[in-house]
Image (cartoon, rainbow, N blue to C red):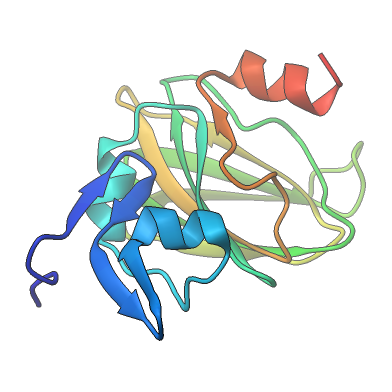
Length: 166
C-alpha cells in the first residue's frame, strides 16, 4: 500500500497533505487544530527508527499510541494504571514481561521477542525488561490516553522526572 503522493513520516509524527471538509493543510497542522479524523502510518518503521525512551505518536479521545526504546538491561519500571488498559507489541529485541496483582507480588514472567504482543489490564502491576544485547523497540496503545499529547521523554530519567513533577 502506498502513502498519498507528497506524504512523509517523521519522528513521532506523520505529515501528509490532506483535505478534511473545508480544512486544508498538513496532517500535523490538522492534528494540532484537533480536527484530524484518524492516524495512518508505518508503525513498524516508526517504532524501529525511534531513539527515545518514549514518544507519543498520536492521542485520540479514547486511545493513545506511543513508541519506546529500551537499552540492554533497561526496563520501563514497575507500574500500574488503575484507569486504563494497555496493549504492547515488540518490534525488535527480547524482553521479559512481569505481571503481578500488587506492587510487592510479581506472579507471572513471560519471555517475549519481536512480533509478540501482550495486554495489561487496568490495575495489573507490570514491567518490561530488556533481556537481550540490542535495543528493544516497542509500541503501546493506552486506552484511555496516559501521557500529554506531544510528550517526548528522551530517557527513562526524563520520564521519571516528569512523572514526579521534576
